[in-house]
Picture: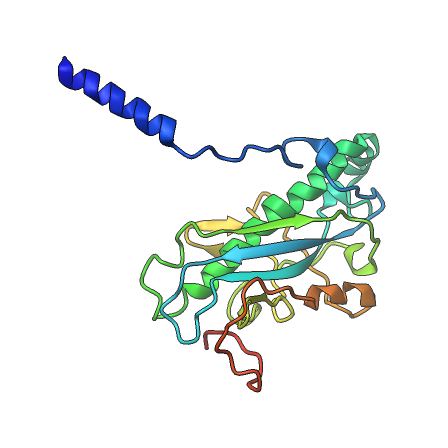
Amino acid sequence: MRLAAWLVVLALTFWACAPVTDTKPDCADDETLCPMSKKTATRVACNCECRFPRLPLSRAKTVEYAGKLIACLPPDLNPSTASPDQKQALDDMPQGEYNQRVFKFCSEDVSEWLSLTIKSQLARFEQVPAGLACQPNDCTCTTEGATITYAPCSTPCEERLCDKSSCQPILRRGGILDFSGCHCNRTSACGFTSPPTSKPPLCRPLVGVVDRSVREDRLYSPLEAEADADESAPEEDFYE
């Protein structure tokens, strides 16, 4: 009985000393906090950040990466590719709900695809211990809203699976996420597929082909630069 009492006291002590997590609401919880998007928009810029453990690979010193990913809005949010029923639902959708769904497209769908695509690339290297690439180290993406109508996002894209030939390494030296060499739109790895087969592929326009404004896909904001990086060396991915 006395032992049980001590266990209760200890449990309450640890609970009282546990750090309080920040539960401040954000766009995912409150649509009034979401950035404004236009229902005429067809593409969105997602600001993504990824954090991975230090990997046993040459030059793999950076653990934080950042970059901007340009994606076409999915049919249920895209007036150009929506079905008649989806267009009607889009017209009837309250603006606040639309803003939130655009945000969640980046924070959920895009971040999930990006996380799994990078894991699929890491899993191909023998230097990475079995299972390490599939650990739950995920990317996060946000957006400032979708406001641009972009011609290449006005028609559905052709599905292309992600593999070594269709998607060049995304993680680059200096903490950069580089999407310029990745042209796939569905990834299978670690027992998962993203987007799932029940959803359309994650369409991404070719950067800068028609609209120069989408060159922002190549604007990077590294979170962490390699202090000992050779500035004279050409930029390259940290694995070969």
